[in-house]
Amino acid sequence: MFQLICMACGRTCADLTVMNCPHDGGVLDLRYEPAEIPLQPRLPGIWRYAARLPVTEAKHIVSLGEGDTPLVSSAQLGAGIDQPRIYFKNEGLNPTGSYKDRIASVGISYLRQLGRRAWAATSSGNAGASLAAYGARAGVDGYLFTLERAPRAKIAQIMSYGPQVMSVKRLGYDPAAEKATWDNIEALCAANDWLMLITARSNSPHAMEGAKTIAYEICQQLHDEAPDVVYVPVGGGGLLSSIWKGFNEWRRAGRITRLPRMVAVQPQGCDPITQAWDGNRPVEPLDDCASFVSGIILTSPPDGDLVLQDLRESDGWALSIPDEVTYQAQAELAGREGLFVEPAAAVVWAAIKADRQSGRLRGDETVVGILTGIGFKDAVALQRMTADKPLPLIEASAILHIKPR
Image (cartoon, rainbow, N blue to C red; front, side):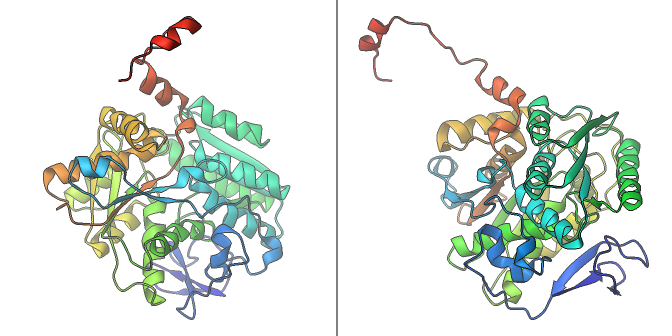
């Protein structure tokens, strides 16, 4: 069982189903007692950690096999920058191709536990695909409001699962449109007794518990050690904040003795968190977005100030990466590591390389980069990555004359 504690005023909420503090609207944190984390190995994937998730009965669990993603040691890129201990957590191998499956599995399971019959959310693609897939699995209705500029390939995946999908004008590059969308989804859910599933701790604290299991898995995969530095792609901020929570819970359980430094990586041109970090101030909405790295472009990140708090607590930092550098990093991960990821994931390799070149990384740290989604998610970026590669048309007889490279 858990308690809901407001991270602003510290009060405990009597109603365990509320999404924000009823006293001051603050972000709610789920706290569990005792500190130990008993494992349930007979349950699949993330559900082995069910004792630290808000679903109290196994009969409500909706799973497609999420979690247990590999932590892959760098084969070539790390050695190339004299940073040999680099690992990539490949979240693109979740059922719908991104880490959002962890959140959707918990969120839709929690929806079933509450006895509700529909969910509503906003997404640039990955969260929508996850919620739609798990909603289909559970037999509940879904309503997805997506960004005006969202990649069509991502939207096609969502539509294939059958929810109602609508694109909202100016959503994704206009702070007023973002706020109005979230406020109106919340009102829609309240009027119909649906569950609002926005992948942010400030909106869906119960569902976001799924993301912290990434930290649990990393520690287990490193044989009960924490890495030194963890790089996380950041749009809304909920992923980094949830992973940091997971490392803290794992340490309180006595399974690790130290915590990593957390690094928030944003796209240059849509980086309100990095700007706030560099300016030593709270996060302020941007007027516009000049990046095209789908999945992490938000002008008004809902969990932005949580990220700043977590960076301070972990002695971490934030940095931003230009789009063209991100696309190059995507090609390097595919061509030299065999890791085919979307640009929103590739930013972590670009950031690791930049920090090693600047001297921020010394070379002896154990570094983990969170690869959040598979490369098929962004068809435009895929075409860009291969546009200059020739595809010769040859006769079958010419095969015998191919020379080794």
